[in-house]
Length: 458
Ligand code: C2E
Ligand code: MG
Ligand code: MG
Image 1 (cartoon, rainbow, N blue to C red):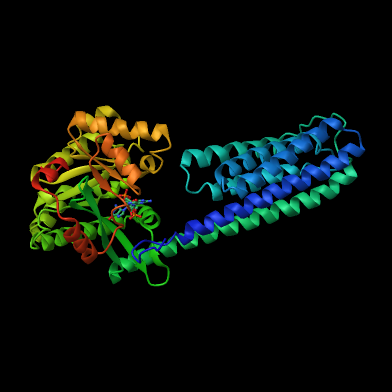
Image 2 (image 1 turned 180 degrees about the horizontal axis):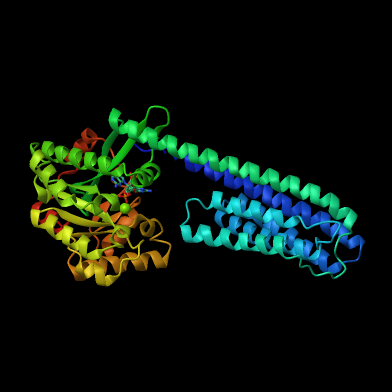
């Protein structure tokens, strides 16, 4: 399918991460297969059948990881690799590499390589996941390095062989650590270079807004969501999923978010002077850090005064994850902004942990069903049930409900049959520059006053 110029490329950083992960999985699978076959051949010649059976399991796991990697099930493959490597390294350390006065144990060094690999490859996971996986592996390392325990069931390799093994193990584990630390340092350097580029981009005006229509069942346009884009001079279009988290971490989201709000309001004012466009609403994404600022309400108020925008046409989108801390402060800010006329939509609804009790207290106008539930709504009965639940919840709490990420007519029809009459997604339009959005509205016709009321405008 043709991708319009304002749709970001697949993130180069994620692409690199994915490629690295797949390469590691192939190497890990090959290692398990070669080790499994090699050890099986070696121990069958010594008649150690219990070890041979374990080696065959290792071989099977290696083949499974290769198959999973081939079918792009990288996450499952990665966890299978980490678990099996952990078991193999501990097993070899305890059964084959039992330390003696002549030859110390060295196999356990690979646990350090495994722990660093966990840090590198789980970098986008939650800290709880990263640190529990790497913590367990490091504990294994400490135990095996400090305690000369071993189970001598007659499988322990002779000292002469283990002395050579020590050289080989130490060499390869040092190499592994060196390579992974190199990757980590490169990642860090790239991270800070991106941060500098982000700062410069803001000064040089490399950011712009695109607008994605929000439409009714009749195809009338109620408004748009403003979506931020960054055109980097060398990298091209960088997707928001990549630079928004970075901007959040560095605090740059504050000037960036203020720019988005100001630009979106100026755009609304421009539209309010155009026939057919004057009643459109504009949804603006607000990040957690932005909303948490003590003077956020005053900032919005001064943008409203400066641009002369009608607050009723402005809708702020908060994500469920921004509601985790200090709910009373959030509700107070929302109430003050609502008193000015500004509306609120809860983005990515269903993906966070907000309790229904909070939902009842929040002064919202709209719930947005997250696109992850819409994607498989026709084939996955759980997704369909969640979408129905959100629609029902919206009805009972008197919030409008909009579905995002609607890509097919089938999805739209299912949603309509279940009582959702507001949509946003590629089925209607991708996020486009302001002029293209204006052309879209004029071709599709703007929504009536009643349709606007139904969409959550007060
Ligand atoms: P979001 O607010 O949930 O925005 C919806 C995302 O879904 C947008 O991605 C949009 O392009 C995409 N989308 C819309 N329709 C479809 C569809 O039919 N299929 C698929 N697959 N995707 C669809 P985008 O523009 O890449 O933005 C990603 C996220 O970045 C946004 O998610 C929002 O959380 C954040 N973001 C974007 N602009 C801003 C901003 O100005 N400020 C803040 N704080 N966050 C922003
Ligand atoms: Mg949004
Ligand atoms: Mg969303």
